[in-house]
Image (tube, rainbow, N blue to C red):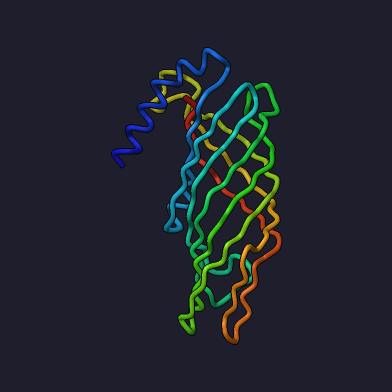
Length: 184
């Protein structure tokens, strides 16, 4: 926690210098990941209307998500996204992304475990909503909410076999979520 506070203070101090050159830093987290016993942190560099997002994340996949009943899956990884803010208010964005995920898989009935490694590439789109536009608001005006979704092609990097069971890695996945962000 101490390191996160130091990171945020450092970003705030450099934010003014970036703003003068039509560039800035943004920081986002996914509260859904924390609710699913994981984490999420995305550092975003913005230059003009182009955004580069480097993120780390983890979740315990909810039961029924994906094609594998009878398994518990904990996914962790990192992602890199490039997107463009497509309107004048810089609220709508779309782009491409790629990621690397390790799925720690447990067949619930037998207790058998394995690790699946997956590379993905896909497209995404979303909307940034800035609810606190006035400087006299209780919350800072750089705070925003971002509902977004991606459609990803998943490429297995290793084979996972469970005795007498049928674990399958989905070739395609849809990932909807909401991030909380701050524009420095």
